Amino acid sequence: MVGIAALALAYVLSQFFRSFLAVLAPDLRVELGMSEAQLSTAASVWFLAFALMQFPVGAALDRLGPRLTASATLLVAVLGSLVMAGATGPSLLFLAMGLIGVGCSAILMASLVIFARSFPPRRFALLSSWFVAFGLMGGVAGSAPLAAAVTTFGWRWVMVGLAAITLLAALAIVLLARDPEAPAGSGAGRGSLKDILRLRMLWPLMAMAAVAYAPASNLRGLWAGPFLEDVHGFSTPEIGEVTFFMALGLIVGSIVHGPLDNVFDTRKWIVVVGSCLTASCLAALAAVGIGSSAAASVLLVLTAFAGTNYSLIMAHARGFMPPHLVGRGVTLMNFFSIGGSGVVQLASGGVFDLAARAGSQDAAYRVVFLFYVALLLAGLSAYLFSRDAKPSRLASLQS
Image (cartoon, rainbow, N blue to C red):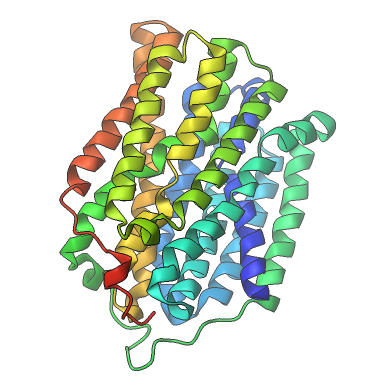
């Protein structure tokens, strides 16, 4: 349990790093001369680097174990934080975000492998969602508290401090975490991604994973900041307040989603309902969020709350994975989730630029929100063909 606690604290940092640009955006625009599209690119670099690392991370988790994999990769985030502290332009910021993404890429997956191999399958969704909920406190730290720290110390010194904290987290994992026992007689460490990709029941889940996490993560991680500043004239502390409540929405949403699969004995339909609610919030944001700062703030928080079905999608996929391929399996699903968020983040910047050139800035934000609605509906159209993984049917499986 001490090792899980060390990983949980490290995951707080991972969530912080994927969302802190929303608060830093005004300073980065002034000091580094970055545009909205460049900030969107910087945010997407984190997600894309994180996603591409899922392939080597999956193999390392099955062969080397969670402890060494998570602690070694986290050291790269230390370097990334220091590069960002000294950034003088967009290029160095892109590099820093890429390094930080690499450094954070194994923390959650290491924890999920421990859960999958140490606890019954029925508990996977609950444990993973509550672990995610705890880590989402990093989003809370990356909102109003970060805004206060930046105001007091400046964003560069904040990044130096984060480098030191990340180094301590890596040391804590290597000293305190323990690897779970490999599945007996299962050929642990063998197999490949091809074995996972042959499981056709996972294909609709991959499509849903690629878009489900993007709206909440992209809005909380970046778009909330420029949107509230450009459209409603919010200051950095005011942006920090809204993103603080968005972070709380993500935490509460994750906690609420955790036990629902056992309550309703379904994973698929909880994801469907949650995604429909997310799409509705985004559509309302496009319709009324431009004209009312209060409505915009509330809808941003509700979008964060509704878009927290990540753990249920992972649990849904986990139900179809053989024990000895859990490391590769969960990291492949995470590749689609995080990689999809990165690609969508990058594409949303291009959508914003095209819409802004064709009309007003306010209209461009409206188009971005509707862009996310369209993606969610596309993912749902594939996911509806998936086979449910009911917890009651998985009770006899061995983790």
